[in-house]
Image (cartoon, rainbow, N blue to C red; front, side, top):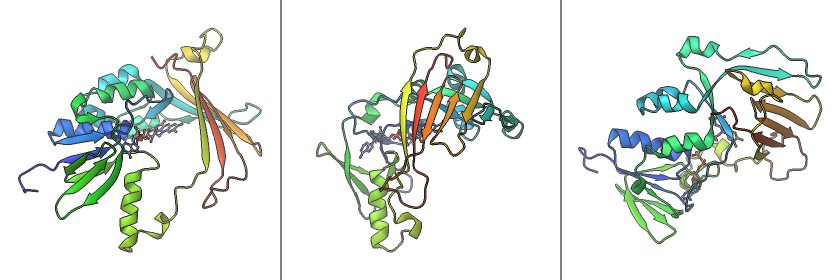
Length: 266
Ligand SMILES: Cc1cc2nc3c(=O)[nH]c(=O)nc-3n(C[C@H](O)[C@H](O)[C@H](O)COP(=O)(O)OP(=O)(O)OC[C@H]3O[C@@H](n4cnc5c(N)ncnc54)[C@H](O)[C@@H]3O)c2cc1C
């Protein structure tokens, strides 16, 4: 790479992370391409929380107002005992005093839509699974499932929790004896999360959805196999299961069920 040139970035994965980076590179006028194995990406329809650590970047990208338009401000986390007696609520608004920003619960597909608009369509190559990455002297080559060979200067693995990019990198580090001991093991499989979405809830029957701000509510089962929680209209069940042989470390195995309703996530 010539010192005056901008590096060409090859991003693997068009999930939230890949699109976010694409948006930032677009804004900085750095050349990049995103490779996505799926023919199209359909983000699951649950809610997620976007907090103060990330929000300044939304401002830099010019999408802060878009975030506010789809977000519902979260003001409290309340944990209940099984008897529904609450523990002391956590006022998450305090974070505003330190950072100037709040937490927002947003619908994941809507967040995805906002990020997708940041990246020109021709810069995302769908239906291209990255199979192999080869590092040369001063270039890096990405091989895709359509027999494509793509040359760049930087490869970014935005290919999710079981990232193939990370696994290839780890293989190389292992050969060189540079992989930290803690990274030698596979990602522990400790939780199975079942995600679903309810029909829109009737505000008369569930008045909590009429409130101006969103609360994160959780019921912690004591010595019980599951926990229930909800983000306003979200219900999450966490069920402890046993005998998960794939477990490493001593992580607690669990199954969690997330059921969302996006009624008041605008
Ligand atoms: C139930 C649940 C609730 C969550 N709640 C929150 C929350 O409230 N707040 C929060 O910040 N985070 C939350 N998270 C975490 C957050 O959703 C994830 O961290 C985030 O979605 C990860 O995005 P990503 O783009 O890194 O990966 P992914 O969304 O997994 O996207 C990876 C993409 O890479 C593609 N890909 C994979 N392999 C290849 C390959 N070889 N070649 C080409 N493409 C490939 C995939 O098809 C996919 O499109 C939650 C996660 C879960 C499961």
